[in-house]
Length: 123
Image 1: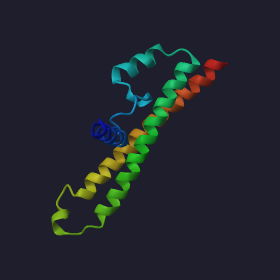
Image 2: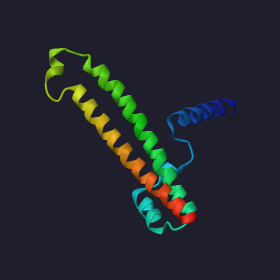
Image 3: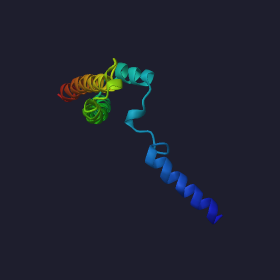
Image 4: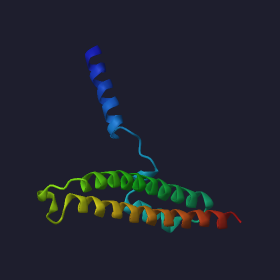
């Protein structure tokens, strides 16, 4: 029993550290659920949930962009001739950085839209 509990405890700690055993948060909506929530939103609380969702997505994408920027900088320092063929690893990192930055801006715009609806719905 003690051996099983130690193994289970290890699994729970490991799973939590990589995000498996964490409860579903506001970022866990499927595309269809999100579309349904947007279509049905009419109250300030519903708008606030959507605004929070998009802000969390924006922050996540900004973090991904920042880590990709670091990788892009690191890969740009490599000047070995193998890395000079297109697409270079630095080019891939730059493209990912630009994608994450663009998506973060889109999520920020969505969040601002719903935050505006929260304010107008309360009046």
